[in-house]
Length: 315
Image (cartoon, rainbow, N blue to C red; front, side):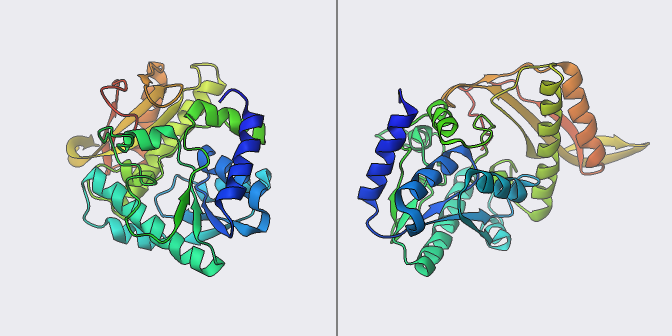
């Protein structure tokens, strides 16, 4: 995409042609889906309805942040609270691919219900090129199933519309800047949310720990960036590992969980390089996580693996 303005005009024309009736928009608050939502609303007006789902798997303060983003972008939207539904669907699941499939299925079933209320037969998604490439599109092998591609169940009555399908993340950011979306360069967040940042079983308690650890990583990295101690990375987050490890609290031996911190630089999300943050920043992250989650998390690790061979997210 060489010209975001030209792309936006053409996308609006295509959306009007592809959606003769009504559509709902899967709006997660990320750059991809927000750009798709704004283009759709521009094309369809009140024939489009953006739906933001609170899955219970979101980052700390995400519902309020997304609401502010949508309001400042001028996007009309509805919020659906569904944390019990998603946590229930993930109960007892440890396989990463199954997590993604179940989240994808639950999203579609929920959107089918919302579409029925709105009288829509189209679902607009912010799918971009890395999503379908990693999900095994175009005869490629599957790296990981994205909930909005391989996680979509067969037999859904909704027709999927993907106006950003051929764009890469750097192109979407340029488009977002053109559309006036606030913070077009903010870091990505996976569609399945903290379900894929909780290695092993997904429970409300383990999601809470991952949420606290993730917030600390974001806060400390952003503080260090503002203090010019390090450049702003592409993505920075915490993963609650599925292993138990020995720690010490006072004079007592305790058995707790471990967290891995992941900070990477990238351009298009197809490849990534592990960043080298200052040791003091990592030390502060470790100190805060083990203090705020005392007795629950007793060890913090730093992931130095590039993509490839690793993916950016752990699961």
